[in-house]
Length: 354
Ligand code: CP3
Image (cartoon, rainbow, N blue to C red):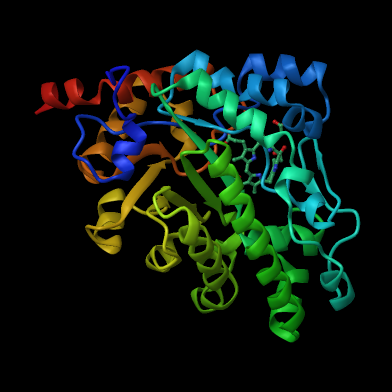
């Protein structure tokens, strides 16, 4: 157990300390698989209300903390939340995700964007992060998060989630000048937002470049990586000590390139064996992951075996145990509880197997 005066596990793992067990949290740990969340959603049917009324967003963020005591408590929000502050209106539709009514396609639209001023356009972030820090103390770590430029541009240009990203790829591969300007503007605003989250209390920040895995490695190097680097570079200038994590969905083909972004921790998904990921990323890169979220539909013995396999392959330094992507709706809550309990006893379980 982490004592009351100690540095929490997640920060210790991010510093590369040798630990008796890895810290554990789950992406989307606050969400639809939890009855408490669904009940609150009935009361506040709009996602923007749930995430932008501080009391409600705090309550949602703390639901998994109270139920499972994860080593990381993530801000309840969305990657598109800062877009209105840049002049891109959006909504989040039930079961569909972000919707942008007036998608960004032209030079004039890019010219009209405003640099983000978080204090003004995101006034709810400060009370949310400050309260989360007070609530968890040093028993857990508060994570902030942002969308990375390519993924935010994909939503803003397509207007919604996409299967093939044909509109943004058309822009990228036929006349990329406007898109590059857009990506650079997003990077500047997102760097400002990361700094603001840290100032408000986020102790670690995760960058979601969820759709960068849709790019070939060559195009990742042109449209995703340079703008990840732009964000990381600007954040490091003022906040060099805050650990940064990068996630790309379907990352097997770009894993080494993710390391070049400058982040401290690379999220590995289940398309890569954790032992292979360690070899590919080298001894200095920390890793997070990498269970298939579907594992949580399996039996308890199955879940335990997969947890122990991942921990053994990742080793006892610089590993944050997590799923490779968000927990799926309809996942049994008792299996989520079992995942956390088992992860926290991993040292004893591994000692008895040996
Ligand atoms: O991880 C957490 O617990 C923090 C909360 C969080 C949400 N969105 C809440 C949310 C985080 C970290 C995100 C990030 C996010 N949002 C990403 C990156 C992660 C990833 O999935 O790759 C992306 C791509 C989005 C955009 C988005 N927002 C999608 C695709 C959806 C889901 C659409 C659906 O209904 O399946 C959303 C809505 C959303 N954001 C939900 C949650 C819990 C689901 C709707 C709801 O529960 O009300």
